[in-house]
Length: 288
Image (cartoon, rainbow, N blue to C red; front, top):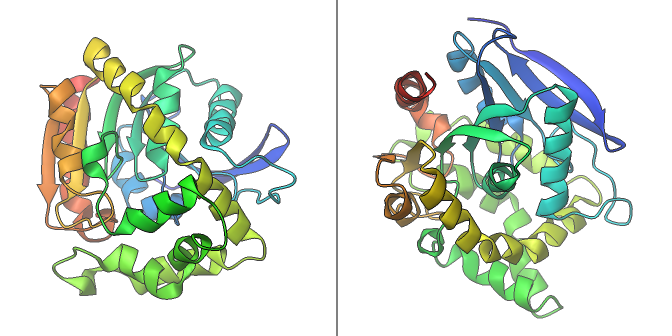
């Protein structure tokens, strides 16, 4: 397997860590991670794709090895996270690329897709939501309650998402064989969640999350008008973004390839070979 390089760049005054592998002249695949993870969630997918593609996986600001300025030093919104990702692409002289989106990576990827400066050639969504049907209950009840009315009555419910048992549950929910999930995955995420001040970072993004939902009509119109090739590889047992979120893509993208896998929210932990196989087939057919 080709080696993965671990790099940093200064974007908009912030240190951005990213993983990169594959030939420099190959089509680019940008991997965008979700909450509460980092580009580490792609540690096995990157070498699986790097034989044919230039793979780039950044850590968002506030996550992984990237900078974690305080909420007073950086305005934690999805617009600003997307702007930093765009800055990294510009730094690397990349304007045309495929995106692979998971969880929080989806609203960041959607903003890039809607940005006329970039050409998003294909989309792969692993629990990267774009429809109201995808929000699984009761997971989202407390988050939307907090986002709509932040305060002492709703904040405890939002803070439940920072607990070690919740982080472990995010990895194990919906997985038929939990022994396939490496416990170091959630333990790594939990250590980073518990950094001083990171709770305020996450609460700020929870409060901003409704802006993603407000953007769904524009995003769905983009799907209809562009007919961008889309592959959904989605855990059928995901109790955060349920399988109806994957099925909904077909409403606007009739040619979308939708595969529901025997997995949960972090499907790569147990379905790497299946997902990388679908991706190689999909990208091989569409990147021509």
